[in-house]
Length: 237
Image (tube, rainbow, N blue to C red; front, side, top):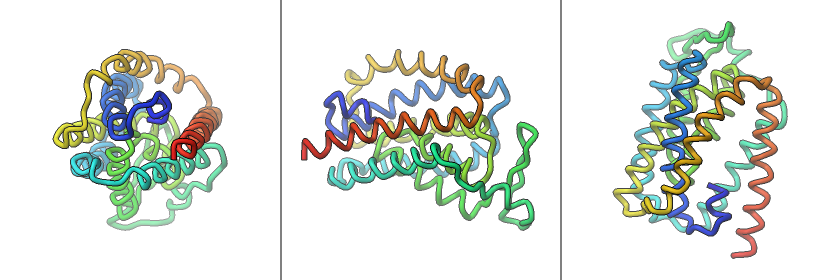
């Protein structure tokens, strides 16, 4: 989304184009993560269903929201995501082992146990679906930090799970934008091939890097993009 805006596409066109590209990229990438058993499929199904519904509705009404709030929201989301990856954040999931109850969902993957607080998970993923549709960010940029920082999900599993969820959320966002008449397939098609190639290459790279390096690389990339994008927004008014 930041790159499309930097290329000069109008905001709503960039949003629908971004989710269309992410749909292909995430679908291809998720098959690799599933094959490598880095995806918590039950978690993706529960959290993804909430994001899917909220993204579909938000996409239908995205073009009715003024651009300035959307631009500020995009900058804020990118900044929070960048800082959560660059700096060490206490992992709430590791502290939740002592908690039990009908709303605490115990999961285990990669030899690590983590605990999902459903009262926190469901509204967070609903919000992620809304952000996906309004900002064209696919949802993964929010899914990964919240899975890691709030619930202690291993980074590789968080990425694999969020990639599968992102495929569904992006599809819902795209349908919502199509209903609203925002979609320009002719803008998106040239980027789809690059997105598919990224979806193929991305898992190979992420699965080989140490999780600490992966988090910080992602954070620095986001921080650079948000700085350039904020400068463009200020210059353009």
